[in-house]
Length: 502
Image (cartoon, rainbow, N blue to C red):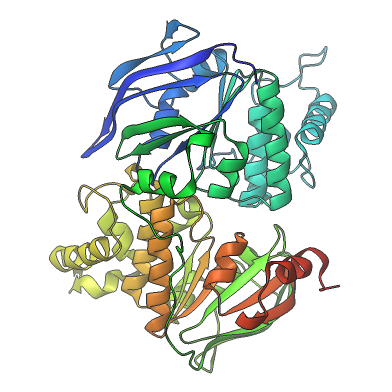
């Protein structure tokens, strides 16, 4: 590790309407090392990094790079200073290709002053080879990529700049274990080249593999910075949440599994690359769906919810065949979906907490043709209290809340809708350890209330600990359905990677 300079953030403060996001934070980030920033959702991690990358402006404080005070007024200033960022919430340009997104405003030009497309695609392919990214064409449009592949493109884009500091905000939240290893190799190579990496993650296994230093934030303040060897997991968690935390974060569900609520028979979609999917989900059950990226898990639940159109197959709810061509059909049949991409699909970011929580059940609050705001407020406030959503008021725009609190709002609106089948696609993606425990407890409470829970997760400990049964998918088909007493990490990975246990 080489230390050839650093960034000094001194006494940084930042407020949003009703929220003190950062309170007098001072932090030093060195080149040649990976500096991990930990904290619960809403701790201020992403806000601090958005100030460093020019997206937000600090209300107070100063930034120095290599001892020289700098003013970062926009992302272009940050890039000129050698700072590149991979955002937790991905913002690609959907109607441009992968290559165009990566090299936007840096496209190679030919003698005729036009874009040299052949060279652009070659540059992108070379970059993917260097970063260990496979199965993404430089010519693909961003709108056609999954969240996981979009995240890989963002990682490659950050690596393409001649950056001296690379900020990674939850970079592994949607990628496979093999891709995580490739990313770690890339990070280590950055450090060897005297590049500083700022790493934000909630995944304990990752930070103990990759960090040189760890800083802990809580409620907008920096709590402490220590070398990795000065932390253990218990100390780190306690420092993040300011309380003792059980080593076993997975609650025990105590209810019997009842009758069938949902049955899917031979559901297929050539366009979405899944075929002849059949399974059932029962009252009081948590059915896990495991599989590698591209296995068809998200496409399956989105088809059940009416976001995609299958070519064939049948869906039954409580023994009755239903036709679902639109999400409104699913809602009417008491099927809910907490999507993988909450910002694009699950929320109206410029609407209030109240409006987001009550939107699927708006007809309940009608008096004649008017909405009863008093009743709407009462029901929304109940969910804020039950889910411990941190918001200054029900009128707060959802875009101003942390990712974890946004996720709770997506879940809360379906609690108000009293859905019988609740499908959760990566429900704890980008969520801190405390909020994860709250969501796991909520899933158990819903199951104990007789709901059928379907959970897609890429985290094997989550799948193993929370599921009563696990359906393993590979290449668009079901390769195994395992009961709880059959569940092992090895079995799941064999079926997911090879299609069989052999």
